[in-house]
Length: 253
Ligand code: BG6
Image (cartoon, rainbow, N blue to C red; front, side, top):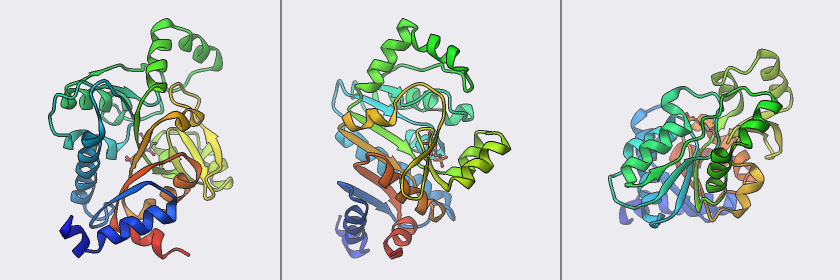
């Protein structure tokens, strides 16, 4: 902590928390866009923070993404006895970055259990309804809504839409609507308004207000605007980010 103050990070953390209306901000030095070690440090900082807060019997919900995957890699082994669940199912990620994969890896590091949501990516409304009505899916969804902590990534809208292979017409429409950020399968404009939501199961944005601690982990200067938009549009308590994002947001009027 002494080192953080000398580097001026502690002060930036407090200024950024105030600017974004958050309880707490953690900043790692550098820019994750330029250096993969910075992403690793982000994952490490987030993992340590989460481990320090979780208590035995807690439910932890996680999203997918490469940053969340790094967090799982960086999680130290403990015996916490928590349950880890994916925040949402089926939003078009590669296997290694899927929320299910990350939930199971985190559970093994934390000495806990996990439940998965095997929801296919593209489901008709009818299929989605019948999937949701399955008793074991119902049970998992209830566990997800009872999470004490949610950890999620934040992405830029258009790169995320491309990564998820949304049709070109949809991507153009998103761009036209001013989509700039993505989190939990929701796409937001600059002011944090939802412009599009993926049709899937799991946490809805409206569930977030019941969750005690929501932690976002995202870095790299290119995500600065997306992070601000999500901080405005989504309930969020804690942000783990890098200095490049902090500087970009703090210097923006
Ligand atoms: C996804 C999350 O899996 O990862 C999104 O569901 C998030 O909410 C995205 O935007 C971020 O991915 P990355 O790879 O940039 O950490």
